[in-house]
Structures are given as C-alpha cells and as structure tokens.
Image 1: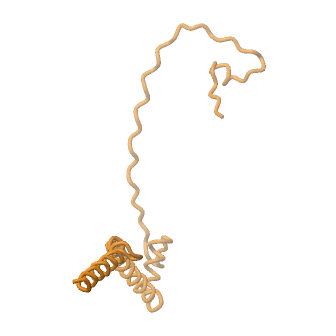
Image 2 (image 1 turned 180 degrees about the horizontal axis):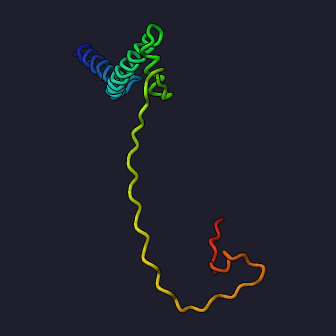
Length: 132
C-alpha cells in the first residue's frame, strides 16, 4: 500500500502545482480576460482608423488626379469664384435690439463732492472696481 499512497500523493501535489501556475502564474486567467477586452477595444479602434485612412487616401487620389477636388477645396476653404460667375452672399437679418429702458426716475440725492485732481469717472463711482 505504501507505493500507491506515494503515487497518489505525488499526483495530487503535481495537480496542485499545475493549478497554481494556471491561476496564479505569470499570465493568469484574470490577465487573459483583461487582454481579451483590450484586444476587442483595439480592434474596434483599428477599424475606425482604417475607414479614416481610406477616406484620406481617396481624397489624396482625387487631389493628385483631377482638378475637381482642388476647385472644390478652393471654393469651400478660400471662398474663390470662377471667372464669369456671380457671387451672391445671403446675410441673415439682424435680430431686433431690445428697446431702451424707460427713463430712470430722478433721484433726490445730493451731489458728491470731488477734488479738483479727480477725473470725472471717479467722481461718479465712489467705490471703483479694484481687480487684482
């Protein structure tokens, strides 16, 4: 019986060592799940970048081969007009301004005294705005 117990004990220890390395080793199962999520995110990001690159590539081909793309760019970005064309600019109507407020009621406060050296702005404003 003794050799069978050693064999079973050795197999149990080997099984525990393998399980330990699977769950808590360098790349454990939790890291694998995180890496899978990161790969999915990167795959989606790469697909978006591929679409953008394809659009930019098409624009480069248009600019190299034809004058239509250059003309469109000049019209939209620089506001250029061909010879013989008439440019019409549509301006939105100005919004009506608010009506001026009714005349302020007269106050009966006594006028403030000012020194001869003070400018008129200080004379009207007893507490000037002091910004730091």
